[in-house]
Amino acid sequence: MSLAPEEQQSSNKRKSGGRVLSPRSSVAETSQKNRKVSSTAERRNKVIVRVPGTTANMGPGFDALGMAVDIWNEISVERASTFAITTEGEGSSRIPTEVGPNGETSHMVMRALKIAFEYAGESPMPPVHVHCRNLVPVCSGFGSSSAAIVGGLIAGLVLAGEELRVRGHGGVDPEELLQLANKIEGHPDNVAPAIYGGIQLSLVFDKELDAGVNQDVMTRRVPIPAGMRLVAYVPGEEARFGGGSNKTEGMRNLLQPTIARSEAVFNIQRTALLIDALHCGDLRMLRHATKDKLHQPIRGEKAYPHLNAMMQAALDAGAHGAYLSGAGPTVMCICSGASGDIFAQNSDERQEKAATEAMRQALESLPTEQTLTWGDGDFYIVSPTEKGAHVTFADPPFSDSLATFGSLDGRL
Image 1 (cartoon, rainbow, N blue to C red):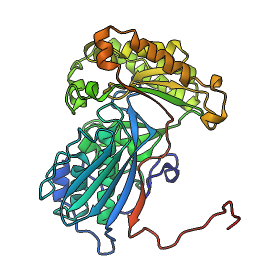
Image 2: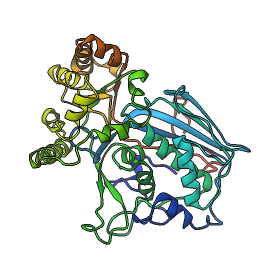
Image 3: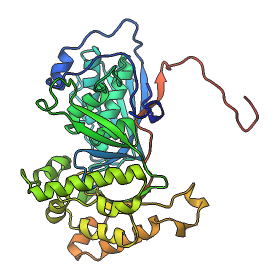
């Protein structure tokens, strides 16, 4: 199973066998209605999956837009005699790894694995050993929970020998993996780019206005402009975990249940401009297209005192756009000028260094109390990635033969 975007064409979807989730049923209900695994399906003993981090909303595209970034988590799952979870890397000291004799745990990878096994018809879930190597910052607005969900689902499906449909035969594509991931996460803006890579525009269907559609959500690929680079400031763990590990729910509770018509119109206009600018590769418009009135102002006022100052500093230093990544507290700015490897290009031709320094100075100019809380973080300079979640190892392998290509020793 490979979910690399090369296989996806314009609608970034792949065709295989399977069934369609009913949008009216929960994950648990759907799992209870599962069919038996086909006798031809090959169950596997071990699988390793890599999943990219993601940045959601991109300003005005609340719950609709997300982009995969070139920071990866690696999830290894192996059938075992007892359940076990081990973690290394980002957040390893804060992520709970306790697991009961039947797989009971709050660990998101194991929970996603359970749903995948049930969906594939292998229930109860067999004992597995899960090992996570995390590079995606946890509880930061970089899509760590979506990476765990998508990685766990793919790993479980591969181990159970289950393939899901992505493409259909007319109408709305089934995108079964996306439906499963969305039911766990609750919104598609992070899980869609985690699955498919690139920039994804997601849509949630309405049961009345979209009567007859069997899916909950769908997604469309938006092109990544050439030379685009990202500068992200990720506050330290103490700041990120200060409100608990479920930051997304807390940040959503800050939002008003209703908004003024003028603010709704503002976000509709800016989201449309953002999509157009990305399609046209017109990065100059991102300064205006990443503005928002729905979620960033209230979050900057109530939760993230570093947000507005750092966004403005990045724009003043020449960044094309700036926004709060997901539910925060990561501040993201969009730069350009990248052409090949960073060490093979004059740094003056690129914007990342100036934007990073300006954001750092803005952070240091905050009141001392705020700097102490939010200043102990790291800057990441990364690129978007067109590649989504993919399997790097499977036992037994998917193929018993390999093609050999040209190499430096002349072998063909």
